[in-house]
Image 1: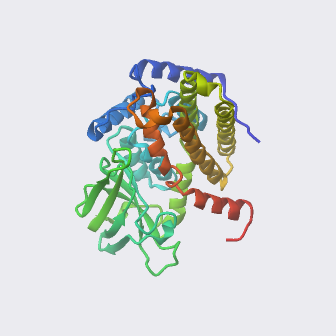
Image 2: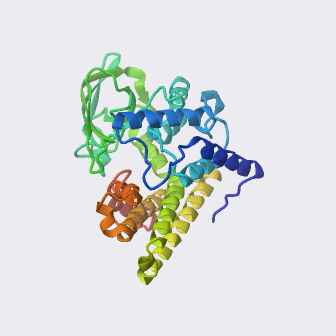
Image 3: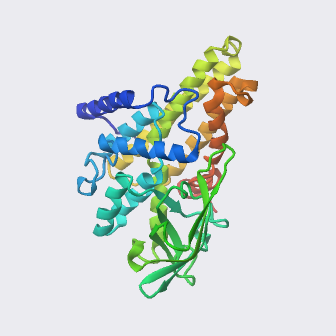
Length: 388
């Protein structure tokens, strides 16, 4: 059952944000070409500036406590803001991992000192966060990670390698999952740490993607020493905390994605209408109708999850259903784009530029935050009661 309704005050909040976005976004933002600066460093500055403007206007940390720099509103205002930002394809920002992952888990498990230090600096963009989880041999099987943190006096000494670490080349902070008890069972003996990326012994190497941009990185730890109290949550209990982080990753920002995907789809329909031969083709018309139905279904799925959270119920494996659905649906939308633009998709047609970039980028969406195969296993085992 979906039980989410918005009050007049929340609807007014939506309209205020909608008006602010119309005023503050670049005039050509959200069009088929404008995706922000191409240069990596310039794009990072653009994203940081955008997030700081959102924070100054009161649209960051919306449902986080005022005591730590948040706005003290409810989760519904946060969902409204996400939906409005997605509706105009507003920049996601460079500190997304901090806001979607680190912030919620620090608020849930952090000490009072960690909350007072981490959250305000994150919201002000004084700190940019990355996530040190995946490794060359520990992606889908995250519990198989090998990065070690060994206690040495009043420090932990970290050695190992992380891979696919988004924005690590811009980040000055990292939420790190490392093995602290090598003799414990696979899912035990893991600890979460809050690490300064400027720590001696930490090396970052950007990886260039097919899109031409570098968002992912390799991160190496060579006898990096971090303070003894830098752990988040209990020592050797990091697995449950990490699962919580991944749950936040799958459950938050879903309204942004759903709304942004709808905006992309409507741009594609406009492009389809300008191609009268294809617009009259039953295949294109039926495909467009099917995708619109999927987008409507996606929003209902998000509302169902939001309803569970608002009413104090666990999200559980429902997050896997939604992640599997949106990531594969988005690929189907971009496959539809390739059919609409055809040969123009590989030429320098301004109208197709944004979709060409997204077509290359979305191949990662069925991999990160748990592959489609992993999500299907979770659904089969935990929701349907099937054997491993």
